[in-house]
Amino acid sequence: MNSTSELDKLSALIRRERDALLYRWREQVRELPSAQHLDAPTLNDHVPQLIDELEEVVAEYNILRACIHDLAQANGLTLQGEPLHILNRVLNGAIGLAVLLEGARLRDLIDRSLPTKP
Image 1 (cartoon, rainbow, N blue to C red):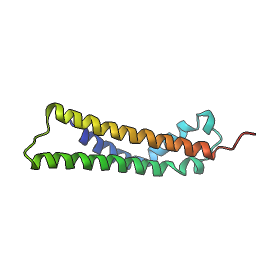
Image 2: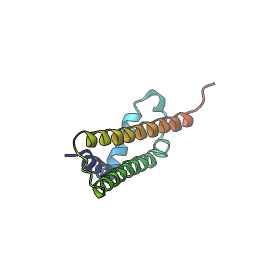
Image 3: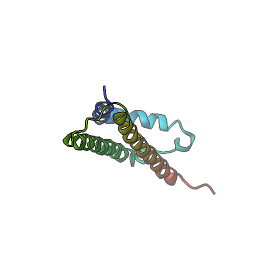
Image 4: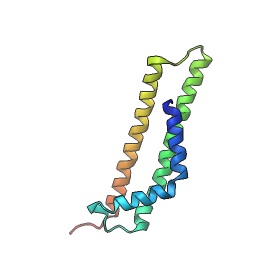
C-alpha cells in the first residue's frame, strides 16, 4: 500500500475518532507535571484546532503529491522506483516537519497558559 493511501486513511481515522482521540490526549497530558493543574477548557482551547490544521497539512501535501504525479504523467513520465521513493520521502518529511512545528506551537501555547512562577 502506498504512503498516500495510508495518509488518507489516517486523516479519515482522525476525523472519525476525533472525540476519542481528544479524550485520550487530555488524559495523558494531565499526567505531565506542567499540565496537571490545567482544566479541560484550557486543554481543549487549542488542540481541536491543531488536529484540524494537521489534517489540512496532510491533505495539502497529498494534493501536491497527486499534482506532481499528474504533471509527470501528462508529460510522459511514470514515477516509479527510486524517483517515486525520493518524492515520497521528501513529501513525507515535509509532513513530519509540519507536525513537529505544530506540536512545538501547541507546547508554547500551553506554556503561556501556565501561571508564572514568582
